[in-house]
Length: 194
Image (cartoon, rainbow, N blue to C red; front, side, top):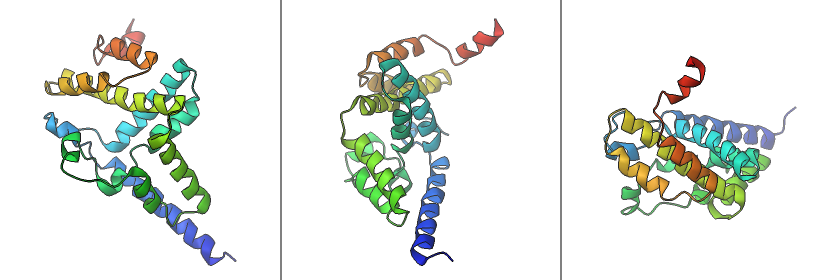
């Protein structure tokens, strides 16, 4: 027989997992300002951010698994508050990500709630090497996405490329940004077309 609190925690945890599915449908709205009609989803951004973060962590001597975890959860609050572009934040007072996360996991299993809140709190408030790398991963992924949109014919993406590149801090992120700015979308294919 299952006790009621265990069942409620299972339901709350499952509700959180279902809520995260909304990130697969939510678009990164800042790209609309750059004229991109059908921008990437929040989940697509977060997935590549986690991959970029893992790679940067390997290059910087940080913990790749920890960085990937930080990157995976860095935008999960956007199921509740949306992806508010920087221009919009000028006019709207948004709840802190830590507070949104606390609401999202309030009915989840206590270990899940504690773990997710801890990850988000660390991403938002720590200055560890892993957090620095995770923040660089977010910026580098955005810059790479901007380069892809540029090559697809969205010239306004150049401003995003320039502004996100200017925020990079780690030597590895700067080196990869330099390399990305010299490559075409199809460049990676040349590795197997040779």
